[in-house]
Each structure stands twice: as C-alpha cells, then as structure tokens.
Length: 253
Image 1 (cartoon, rainbow, N blue to C red):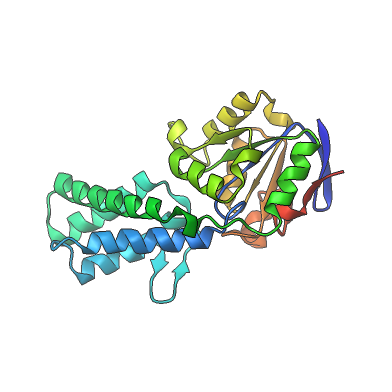
Image 2 (tube, one colour):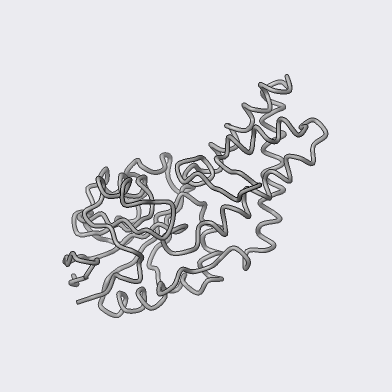
C-alpha cells in the first residue's frame, strides 16, 4: 500500500485503475478518426445516400462540419457493438433494407474502417501531458496500475504501446473481456482480480460519469474524475470523491 495524492485528497491505495481515452490518451484525436472513418466506409455503399449518412452521423453524436463530439453520445461512451446496432437501425428505417442485411452492411463498413484505422494507429495514440511521468512515479512507489476501458484489447494494447505507456501497466482490461461493460462492475472487478487487490483499496480515475459509476458499482475505494476528456465539473462532481485537472496531478506522497 502507498500513500498517494489525488489533488487535494490523500489516500492509501494498493492499485489505481485508469480509463484510457480522455484519461491517458487524447480522446478527441481517436474519436474524430473513428467517426470520419466509419462514416466514410458507410458512404461507400450505393445503398446509403446522403440523407441516411447524415442521420447516422447524428446518431453517433458527431458533427463532421464543426468536429463536435457529444461527450454523452454513442461515439464517446458506447462500445462499437452498440454503435453498429444504432446505425443499422437507421439504415433499416430509412432505406427499407431488411434488418439482417442492414446490420451486415453496417458491420462490413465498420470492419473496413477498423482495418484502415489500424494502419494509422500512430496518428491516434497521443498521450496527454505528464501522463508518463505520473505512471513512472506511481510504479516506483509500489502502486499496481491497471486499465479499464470500453475499447477492445487489441486496439488498446496497440495504442498504449505506440504511446509508450503500455509497459507501465500490470493489466489491461477491455470491453471484450466481460459480458457487461461500463458502468456495470464486471470490468473493474476483473482488473482487481487480475491485479490481486481488494476493490476497497483501489482508486479509479476517469473522465466520464460511466467511469465513476463503474467504480461505485464495483465498490472501489476512491473515485477520481479528470477534466482531460468528456467530463465536466458538473457531471463528474456528484459521482467523484475528488475532481482534478489531469492524471499528471496524481503523485505518491
């Protein structure tokens, strides 16, 4: 156990779980790349016209013209499997394509977009300032570190490796390892189990209400909101024990 300062709060913890996008890495770089790629791939089908594509864009919680991402929308918080179903429903409703065909069409477009994104993973793996230094100091103090992300393991691993952060973590937990994603407790409990720590002696750090609800539902000892991603003091404050500017403010005492 180590004494760790989280902004104004000091707590003894065995481990810290971190969200990935918006907490460790610049979420908006990834979100823009994902949204643009998925919409471009959908638009390659001659069965999806401009009106349908515009509706899919809106359903993502994204505006290509202004580059605005709704931090509460599917692009920011939903796993890809749910996003596919959402846009498949748009295609089904607006084109009359049978449901099974509509879903297969969207799945194919997303698969193409993912393949293209993997080819440029360096471009979307941008660590936030001060992250590496904070992780090094925490590891040196004996704190075990884990990741609990809505993203899937293969891409998460690639992004963290490219950004130079992967080596600092003892375990990487992704949405594809559990049946229920955030805010259900499954992912946090899995990471705690793999780290060999009791949930009550663990802090979770994240930029969204879903991260903090995950911590609450899993019975984690401390919930820390950060303002480097989609969260605001207004939506994080009621769920967090403390809200800080970034992970760079976390340090051992």
